Image (cartoon, rainbow, N blue to C red; front, side):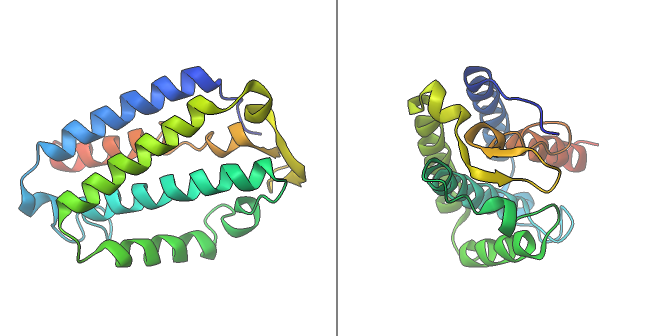
Length: 169
């Protein structure tokens, strides 16, 4: 079962993790950022592109949840082909862009996502999309969309941890 996420605590956590990852990637040289296969098959630039894409997708999914039309629980089940394909397409879409453009898109997507999270009422934060549930039985709610953890952190914090382990062993 998913662990409940307090809206205001989550925003603070996301802001801290974003700042940490932002400072980390901005401190790296271009050849490190663009080095292929640094993190599995991805470069650090690919990770940032991946994060931007998921931020935009989360913004869209909040609207779908509030309209009782959630899709994530069907399209992106744990380690699903849908998630793998989404990542592949979104990284490929940004692969030829300069890193600064990818970084700017990531910052913009994060800013929009935080703005949306701040604008949600308590009722919206708790809203369940119809009778939708995740595979393990938890209700699909706005807050549950942001309960995802990676490497024991939020999405961005998990990738920051992963990158640090590779570049600063």
